[in-house]
Image 1 (cartoon, rainbow, N blue to C red):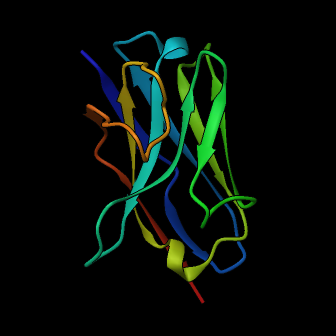
Image 2 (image 1 turned 135 degrees about the vertical axis):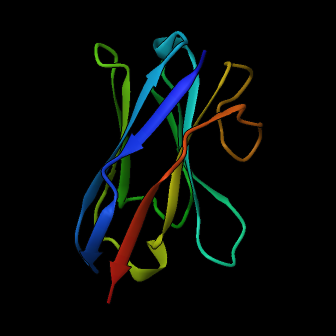
Length: 125
């Protein structure tokens, strides 16, 4: 059974940093698509970043490029999202999601089947 557990959210001031973790189990961590999504109050869910863990090929939304970075620890089956230079508009619930690998792991071009419960990020100005 696929399980994804997010952690690391919190409240920070603009310009600060957070590192989110997604602890995964129940699938071949080093051969799947894993992504981070976020949803702010009153807004639709949007893709933030995703990765094919087999080759560490990454994809980022334009709004976070240069500020956010994915990394993986295969031994711990954990995906990290390092978030730097945070802005108030980054405030949202952040979700980790996973999907079987296909032609692409780009979050904008495929569906993710398995979801965690989310971790809240709040950035104050």
